[in-house]
Length: 335
Image (cartoon, rainbow, N blue to C red; front, side):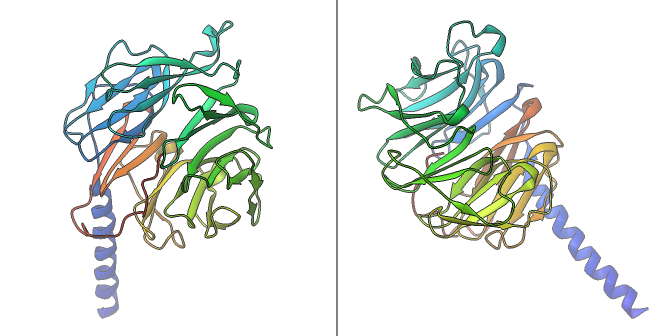
């Protein structure tokens, strides 16, 4: 009889823990059913969400209210990224049926915090889609995309020139570790790293099956990073992207994005509402119920305040009420 009570007590504790985690993420109503692709916060108060058919949402009160920005574009906004409060970019993608002779992807740039936007084209991209922008600490940017497309931001901070990449796969994720070192990931298990700001690239080695398509990469500091992708793959590096070892994610669903708050705690999100959480640097990943079974595409944290966006206008908010003094990444990661 005593054993039964002990088991029930332990079960109650575990159940309480699961419910507490579920309560930390809550849905935010933003009055949109668009497919939301990207979320980015400039600081604790100022944030942006981009999505299908030109959906662009903006907050200046930490996400309490979101305002839709009209007449920016009618095309899909695949990514929102800012290098500071004033300067930002929207990576836009035209509908495949309306391409004509125009390129598949283009950029909208703001220099006044999103008040106005001006268009910039990838002139050498032709019909290749560009999938990701990322920036170094000093503001240099790289853009990656289909069939190994790679572009570098020129000195005028507006034009993009074509660079050479030793891969023909679709590249989906990238990050700078400092002003010179960076990592990009993509199809065919491709992970490449550079030590000279994208002029030359070398292949990273992945243990185990490396044929998965990687979708996103995140570095907590100049050494330690994670990459996620199809089939639930999660890989970690501790030497700036040269060697990677796989971690057990506990899911076979495609993972679309990953974010670490510090050296131990991180989140990964994916299709069918998959959300994973670790407090052990990825040695153990735990499944968390986010309260949605839609595809989750983008995750971003400003301090302990987290945001996830996805299909069907899904916006999830996470507010951690404790451990305010927990260590943060040592440098500002431009994603």
